[in-house]
Length: 94
Image 1 (cartoon, helix red, strand yellow):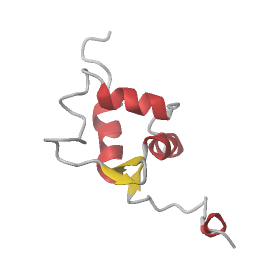
Image 2: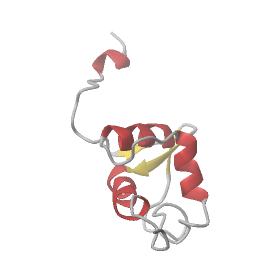
Image 3: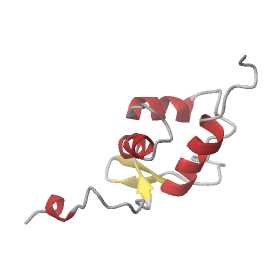
């Protein structure tokens, strides 16, 4: 038996933390975005457009974590950002 044998891919519970890759997958699984890649999440995290509202990093409400070489983000604030900030239409859009 390997650790992969113990993972229930149908488990509806949310993980306590996500990486850029697993976060992108979770956003699509939860129906928050139609399509996004880890590169898309990284772009959003570093874009000037969302610099004020991205919740992770130095001087932000939530620190990034580490697991080996992976960057971790707390799941709930990650999802909340995408539900309430990212997924909102631009105010200047028609």
